[in-house]
Every structure is written in C-alpha cells, then in structure tokens.
Image: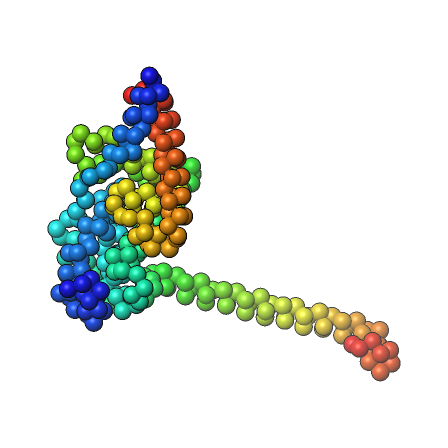
Length: 193
Length: 102
C-alpha cells in the first residue's frame, strides 16, 4: 500500500494504518530530529509530537506534495520550534542566574553530542561537525541536515522548505562555506589538532 | 603543507556523516505515541486549573478596582458640587440672577 493510501485510512481513525505509517517514517523523523536537536530526549519528544500531529491532522493532507515531504515539513517545523523554545529557556536561565547564583546558570547548554549512527572511527569528527552545524542560521541548518545527513535530493529539499531548487543550492553552498570557516577557526584555535 | 593538512581535515569533518546509519528511536516510543493519541484531541493548549483560577481572580480584582475608582470619583464629584452649592448659597447667587449655571 502506498503512503498516501495509508494516510487516508489514518484519517478515518484506523490504528493499524497508523502503525504502518509509523513503521515507514519513524527512522526518518527521529534521525532528522536528533540531527537538529542533538539530544535523545528532545528528539524522542519531537518524534512523538510529529506522529501525534500526523494522526490528528491526517484529514488535512491535501496531496499537493508526497506524504514523505508532508511529514518532513512537520518534523522540520517542530524541530525549529523546539530549538527556539530551548533558546528562550537558555536566555531565561541566564537572566535568573544573574539574580540568583544558586540556579546554576546555563543548564540548558547542549552537551557534546555523539550521533548514534556514527561509527567509532568518525565519532570525534562527527561531534565537531554537529557543534559547527549548531552555529549555522536556521535555513542553512535545514538544507544541510536534509542533504548531508538525511541524504535527500535538492528537489525534495526544495519541496520541504517551499523554496526553488536554485535557492536550496545557494543555501547549501553558503552552509558549506560557513562550516568550512567555522571548522578552519576550530582547527587553528586547537593548533592543528 | 599546514594549509593542505587543514583543508584535508576540514573536508574529512564535513564528510564525516556520509554513509552513516540512521538513528533509530527506542522500541517503546510507539507505545508512548499510542497513549497520547488515545487522549481526546483538543485543539490549542490546555490550561491548568491553577492558571485558570489565577486568571479569573485577576479579572475579578481588576473589575473591583475599576468600580472602586469610579465610585470614589463620583463621591468626590458630589462633594465638590456640595461645596460649590454652599458657596453659592452663602453669596446668594442663583441660576436666574447671575446665570452662572450652578
């Protein structure tokens, strides 16, 4: 059965169809979420939020894009919302730490992140890459994660981000240029590693 | 040479996610989602009873304070009018004789 047909059944409240849809997309949603949020707990919560929204809004799917694109769009939006929420929390905890030293200050800073799919030989380099990705503007992060980590085509990314393919290409070029600069600075500040 | 090493290192880091396996969610995640969708769906955010009570109390307080301010003003106006009337009576000034509109 095609995802579009499964989604029609989900819209009618078919729990089995929802289970099939979850099985088809759980890894994509979770992998995208963990690449953005770089925390397993946050990625799990966002994955839950995405599938709860998919279940309740299956009837609103218009069919103008593939189900995959629709689910990726929901995932990207939820991840960006969570990042903004975390940043607000971080700012708030910074302000409270000024007035109350006992609050511990910047508790919301993300720790060193190891992507669960990365092998031991690449773990350190991937952690440095994720730390650099965090410093990119939102739309460059999205383009880079969807292309380099999710392995989507530029066409799919353009549909998810609702941009032209040229715009996505330009975003990817800028993301890579910025990452090269961030990584060069890191290399030099660590004296050639 | 140093520049070459740096460039190679940067490219290695940039490509460190190539061919990496997808991260998989925990087995029990579907159960958590099922429990969440079993709860009747309400559009928008649910507000706790405490928040709702605090909001209701604030609104009542605001209305009471406004009413107090209004009645206080009215009493003050009446008092002012009484004072003006007393002065008018003292000097025997009336609407008809002086046209002061008192």
